[in-house]
Length: 174
Ligand code: GTP
Ligand code: MG
Image 1 (cartoon, helix red, strand yellow):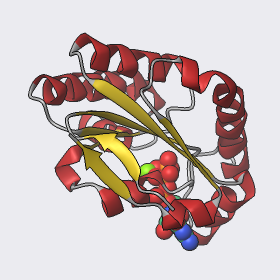
Image 2 (spheres, protein in one colour):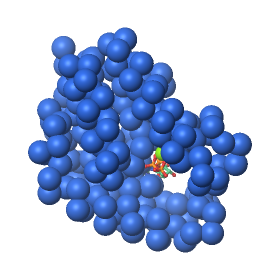
Image 3 (tube, rainbow, N blue to C red):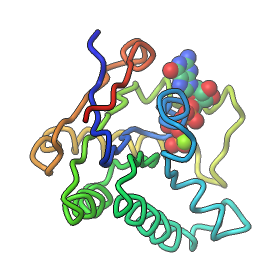
Image 4 (cartoon, rainbow, N blue to C red):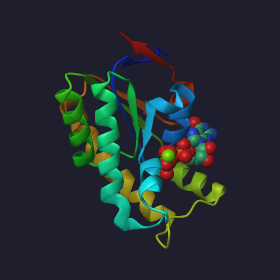
């Protein structure tokens, strides 16, 4: 299959439910410093990974980091679920504010696969059952997919299923 073209100096949003493989994909196709992850930002502002009150500060830090990297002309990949329109809109606006292109890469993996992966790895989300988290993300993602191409992205790459995610390659376009 054709490589996914992303802007060499610009923004890339990974979009997918928890467990869809965003962090794995990011580590495979981008350098560690190119990737800004919501989990890392959360860890930097909260000593307790399950402290929900840290979420706004974590996203504040993420936006700030992304903004600085874009101002410096560095390719930046946002590793967060990005299934909510508000989260995407803020990041698209940030890129446009720097006159830079922004692409989306959607990892469309069945909710059941994501849940099974979490179960296999023993990952938990406090007291909330993993199914509930993934199902909420999946519902948000489905709602998002219809209008995604009208949100200001240069390109929306949709990887439909685990095979397409695993086979994907990325090329930086100048
Ligand atoms: P959150 O950070 O919770 O949003 O999840 P994520 O989308 O970053 O998923 P992550 O990359 O952490 O992958 C979740 C689990 O699925 C891990 O145990 C990975 O090893 C596994 N996994 C990720 N990508 C793939 C893939 O392409 N194929 C297979 N077989 N397993 C994968
Ligand atoms: Mg992750």
